[in-house]
Amino acid sequence: MSKLIGYIDFDGVLLDTEKELFKEYHELKNKGIDITRERYLIEKDWEIWLKQADIIGDSLEILKKNFERDFSILTTIHSFNEGKAKIDYLRKNGVKNNVILVPYICKKHEVVDPKGNVLVDDYGGNLIGWQASGGVAIRFSNSSQKKYDDFSVVSNLNMAFEIIEQLRID
Image (cartoon, rainbow, N blue to C red):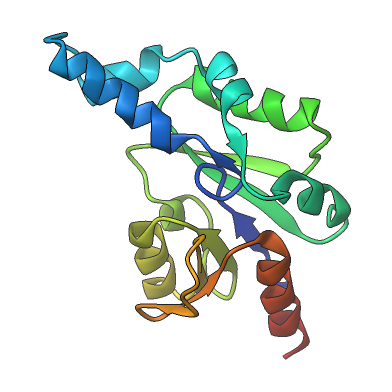
């Protein structure tokens, strides 16, 4: 039997990068600036953006404490600059887990093998594809819901790690 691997999303699970990001994009569009969403994301200064983003709960500390377990960060990127900035941010904050960069034109379940492995993500589309490909999908949300569609819901990484450890025992 192969070893279960846990994959943790970056945006919306570790850092709250998206809330203000798309607010800024829509403000530019409302000012009449002709910019596509793709171009906006490619040209973004990700190093500065990540520095100002809020850490969700104590996610980075939890990752550092659980480094010996088999978890990788699986994050969608829109540019190489975004990918490098995410890796640099994690390393500067003491997170040593592997980081797998997923080009935005790919799906997470196409980049790594989900079969029998776990994905913790806040985006339902990623979870649906993961589960349909034989993986275990856990939705990350700050809500008090215990279930979301067919997914277990966690509001912090400790909860996710508890579920993953139970799956490893079973």
